[in-house]
Length: 324
Image (cartoon, rainbow, N blue to C red; front, side, top):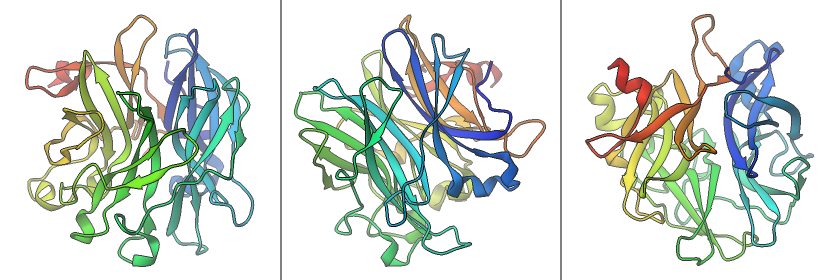
């Protein structure tokens, strides 16, 4: 049973595990907008729970846009949830501002909300992470339609030295069509953050690398991300490559990320894939269904698909292996 809402589109999502329950946080916007492209500036974050990743109880909205002048004054977008040493849960999420009415141009900034129980969330306006023009393209550069700084994925340093954040970003240099990188920030305490150089290099064939996730499956590390066909560029486009959910093995969880070695994990019928460990220890992939038989944009979240390593050293999804 996929996760879907009758009157809302559902797309990007992320999860937290409280031990007995999987907590799903998802972007949603009303289908009454008519044009699915308008969902981005009308997105809010919802919450659902499940014991098996297949049967979900929807609990409704938990986080929405801020007030005028806030970093999230237009919409709240994709994020991740971690539990800090103080026991509090923190949701790092993307805040979007659309400065020009009727235009897709927007400025993205990362904010945080905190919770004691994963149900009630309170924004902490003092913690905001913005793109540093020393390393990253910004809206003021005028080379892209947006200031790309979104989809934070936060995880603890493997050696215990603070925290890392992977970010969908674009480099401050290179071919403007091929500047997609994995941005990087670090923190000693989840409160203060320092923006670092990108973990990947521009020129890897992606205009953006969306919803990055570091995952360790059977002791081997990989970074998942998504890039759709219109944003596959450079030599990849020349070879006729298409978009979807991608994965690239990494030696060190803290980088570098050789994005040029990335391979497709799924076609773009699925997007924004997340690797999740089930309560019985199996790894699975969930993604939002990008297209369906009855509509151009399905706007719902898939059932879990078995995830593992293939003989060629890349992550693979069992269903796709069976159909190739």
